[in-house]
Image (cartoon, rainbow, N blue to C red; front, side, top):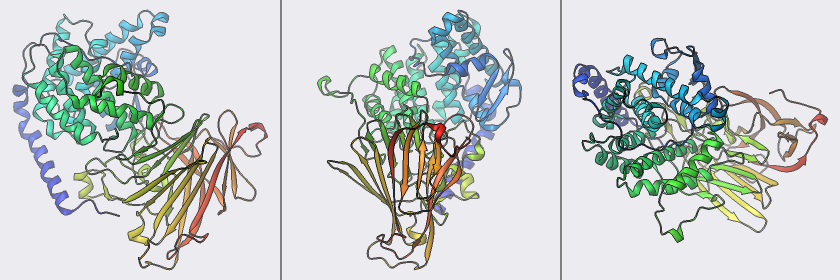
Length: 612
């Protein structure tokens, strides 16, 4: 287990934080002058709107209801959200970020809805313009919160991405001119404070905003395009790994990075501007990676703080990425794989995929600082889905959930893996000075993690080992997984052992739990011998879980990877006591389990039903 944060890290962070605070306090009087901008002409080009918003959310906004960050605010159909108090800081952050403009744009793109209500398209555009104009009136000159870089870049990107769809219908009016002026002022702010933008997707998006500004504004580029392309190339090199994953090791972050780059590339193409080969190469790598991270239901597996995302969103996104980019290889060599690959060697995930049964296991360690603020302590955790839906999951997380759940969901016990003596496989930064200046970073990671894969005539074997418990308990955790050729037989083995050549730290027994979190839609029944359990998915599709250890028990769980509220669920737990000096060959230190498909089952015959 490797220490990641030292005194020097805290010192540098304090200096940076002090500088940012002084910049805000001392620079405020000059900002209006620095950001002053004369009249801006109309756009010379527009980025393509990918149609990735949610119609249901757009209808709620038209009714005056904003549901953001796990909270809601009802202002009425003609209300002004900028003159009322936000119910929470996460709500305010998302409200001022304007990503919800995608949902209003979705109302204009929905042909079925337009046939039902011919006025819906105009109504959505008018409401979007009113909300943007209201924000400009209240916050357009300056505000220390709403002009913070992480909020600023989201807002500018959202305005660019939805400009043609909902913000440009009155392009020859004074209000439209004021919108363009405000957008350009905010763009200037991004250019001057780019390095203060938080690392990760916010900084990738900040660079993309500069490219969008240079591509879209006709006569006001002022070198913005060249600067934007330079810094965007730099961020792509750092953030987009060679296999197409994002440096955060989060599937949803990879999808959002793809969205940013596809929209940016579309603006360059519309302007006829020479883009960057790095953008095209990154898109070429990211799109197959989204397929790799996709479960049987078309949504993402939930790892490292990412939600499942919407299946329709992902399908549109990947399709657009393949339509709008030129291949970076000769056309005869450019192929879209019909089946996802099995191993992401840089992002460190393994995928087993047979006949609709898909299993994804995390075989990596924590992402590097400062890209670890959302990462989880979950070495060797896995999720599993079938044609009938999700079966085995992690508790998960997505940004619309209540913030009070955030840190608990990063703990090892919130994942389908082994937990030793109720301790995390690694350490999150404890509350205090370091966490205030560095954020909720990972202080000690669970790595290194080693993994091997064997393809055999009967199926595929994976074997992975992590050292997250080695420093405190002197043992490593090894997990072996097997899937047969038809995806109906899953076998696992979890072993605790002292690494060869090392002296045991203890000869005492150490308690452990192996947790298998179930999706909320799964019903579970324990057998009388407490060695097996029946798992029933929607539609009556059954799986039999067995173990040679036990006894099995059921505990409450929770699922947060989807929607804006936690869902009640259950988990199967195998508990035992392993010897601290074991070699992994005894039954106390080696636990075997299996999952086998049973086919259709009449749920009315179940003797035990779980209330969700």
